[in-house]
Image (tube, rainbow over all chains, first blue to last red; front, side, top):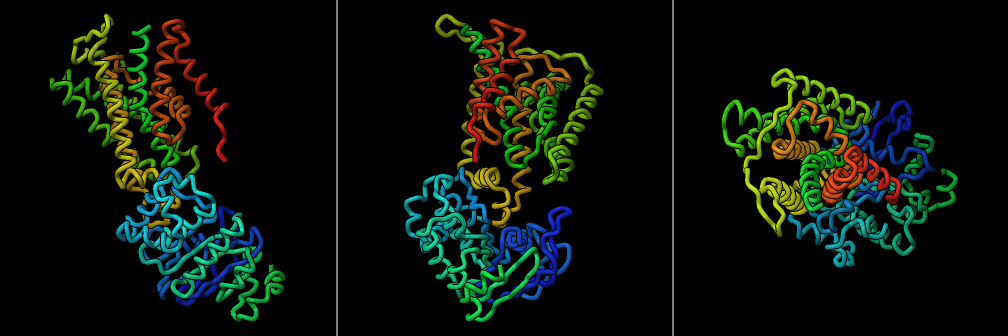
Length: 229
Length: 277
């Protein structure tokens, strides 16, 4: 479904990714792990079209998508949930969903239902300014927004970072529910979560892929993962 | 004192009309548009030209001024600013300042450098509790308040407005939801230019129209927008009237310092405002 083939990416003169390749099959959940500064976020941003690769190609359903804008990729089914948990804080939760519904062409009521399906408690906050939500609720709202329309590939950057254990469980439940229904690339440092959900793990170090773990026995071995980091 | 307050409200109304577009464009595009008050000047000059050279009524002269200034705003956005999105603020600063200087020189070339006063189009006064106020000034204040509510409706209730607000919060987030922000930036920019021109049209009968009127008001715009909060439209409204009153009341007791206080107020707000994490 998605093939990243030998891409390099940089911010100005600072080259962050070096010859990175990975492959994702339909319905697969791939986790990217690595230390801070390994290039995980840069990789997701490059796939989402927020950064143009210096070399290499990115293929989706066989067609080259490197250099396409995030707007074009959204309409091909790409959904990106950034690390910063930035919702549209001046708008209500319902309006946040409305913007996603407007863009995808999905009726608002159906879009709201999709968000409530993954997190029924959000009903109480629909008319609240999204800026007033907690970090965990914001994260769930962003994941919910990503499910509006017809998503095919979710790109989620550190969904559990900085969240309380109870919220992490909630997000883990949501991701578990999505597993198999959608393809996803998730950047995550929470190794127990990775071992529970991953079909494949790519370990990044200093902008390079140093390991790709495919076998359940490799993925479930947290010692191995920790050593890879 | 009552008259100083009335004058302050008028100045506040004009400052609001000009500053709100400035705030909107900085908030959405992160562009400091020095050419913003060029559209204010163009609006005022086209009104004068319509009245004196074409001989059409004030209302239609105002429509011409606002319409042409909006078109000029569109051209500035389309051909200058759009090329500078994402670049350092210095580039937009220099480019828009160049557009401003070129625009002012064209105005001087067409209409000369001498001020062009025009008279109050209504020419009547209303009396309240023994105080006499020009009806035109009351109308200017009412119009600014109507624009505020109209803009609030546009921003809060229409999808275009909501997308502009969303882009103010998180431009990249809007793009990642498949929405090309450029179209909405253009709408915000043209709207801002039209409102600045409306300010110029309405202020023309109160002050003399001259080629440098834009550079003078630009600094006050900065003070308003920084006091009200960049991209904060309600804050811009409150700051406009607050600074308008401050300028007017100070002018009554200390004419030389009337505008200085606006910048002192701005500096105090910047120093005391809590820094958002």
